[in-house]
Length: 428
Ligand SMILES: [Zn+2]
Image (cartoon, rainbow, N blue to C red):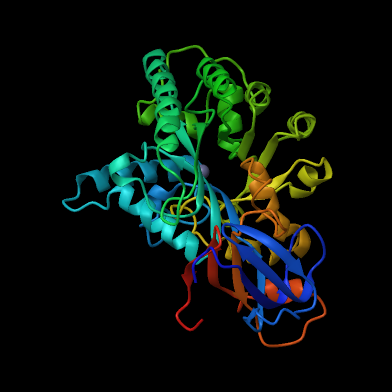
């Protein structure tokens, strides 16, 4: 069906996110937008999809798609982050040496296809390449591309700043020449100062200033591991030793005592901030983020968090302060897939987790909000983009429809972006 004819779908349950679940509801799309949500499936022209749930497309707020060709995470569960980073560095070098390496662009394309299969229609992607014109990956999903920046030495920092500036300028030109369509969804540029152990404060300040000048969002890995906090405080520890082994810092340069707070003070003054992980943020740091909650989000990656066997995630402290929390899969280097529904199911299976209603919001509306796109994505209501997914439910009654939605048997069977069907299981 073309997207110029209104199409109406009926489902056992609609999950509009803003508002309660609708039983036997219909949703109508016209062009790229949702035009109606109705209770009681009385619309004769509705196509009844049967025992399914319809909800907004999921938002994966933190990915590194260049690792999407991996079939299993690198390293072993529970390994300290510094050891894992060395594994990643070795893997990159080995991939560069092989006769037929999977090119990063090809891996990104694989990751985008996998994301659509899992109903992910919006991504916050950390990229280490420029997604060049020749291989601009095709996907209708909305992608915010946070160009990664690294620099501990003055020379590397200067080069990093130049590349960030160039990225924002060239990207804006490229996007203005390319109308979003069924093969290439909207792309938004952002910056990603990588992490406190690869970006010093002067470079961070320059990148934050650039983000203000260009009104671009910023995503930074922060307070991810105890080793990172130790390195900032003392200049020593396993992460310091790892950086020295890689020759990534000058061991003779004097250490200035720091904490994630010093980084947050700068980051909070950007137009939009995504704090990636934040596993070890203390109360003072969370209080600071709460003061900036209108433009700050924290991104929790539950299965990656479990892979590294970090201490219990402080989600209650985050939510109690009203800081928006969203979800990411992180990459296939620390997670078996890019399935955000599986991420939500996993989180709900933990001994302590937010409620199913909250978890659904984290993976939809909060993700859209983290990326600054909550005015058009992350909920089902007239006027919003027709980015939605159909999930086949188990065939049984349930007191709470969320129970069915998050049942391990439930599966994404259709994905619509801008009103167009972009993925369907063969049997549907
Ligand atoms: Zn990451």
